[in-house]
Amino acid sequence: MITWGIDGCRGGWLAVSVSGGACTYRYFALGDQDFWQLWETGDRLLIDLPVGLSSTAAGRPCDRLLRQTLGRGYSSSVFTPPVRQALTAQTYPEACAINASICGKKLSKQTWFIMGRIRDVDIFLSQNPAAATKTYESHPERLFQRLHGGTLPHKKKTVPGQSLRSALLRQVLGADAIALAARIRAAHPQKVLANDDIWDAIALAYFADLEPQTPLPNPPDVDERGLRMAFF
Image 1: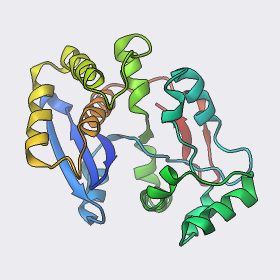
Image 2: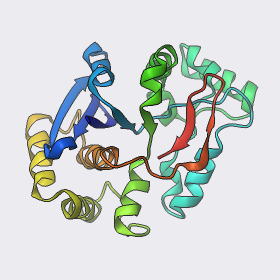
Image 3: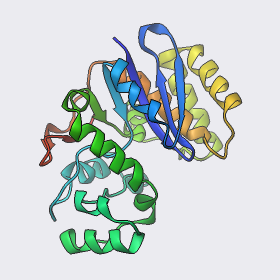
């Protein structure tokens, strides 16, 4: 079985695999159509990006549940995805207007900056049911909490936070995880790929290689296109 952990970064996408005991990775610049080949060869993919989307004012219950699970200090790491109708917007004001007309809330700039990725993945999974079946949305901070056994004392952008996350991954993947991170870091500049993106992708890869974890919520909600709205 081939599994992938996928994390978005400033320059595009970082995909990591630890399946079969081999730590490998692929980096894709934004717009690189080879990115979709991951679904041709992969059997299970964990991605840190909204998968199922709401089309109503109700939003996605999984986002609210995850904020509660992560707790104080980390709930802000869970941003609110757009309603699907807002994906057609060409400008930030237009997207805010569409979103507000349906759910009463504008979009954050953080959400707007990744709208293109959300739209691309939504179109791809909606048109490829087989790919959607093996795609699981996840959140790295929830995964690191599982490895740590509770809330982490340091945020991921800090040096202590990155040291802790690397240590947690070393515990489950051994020195190979650290070597892989060093290899990725040497090959790609900080301006396109931050250190925390590397640790996030490796964490996603580790959990992708396990049997799917209990989803949040359980059972998962599904959107109007049958895509799961849940964190694994």
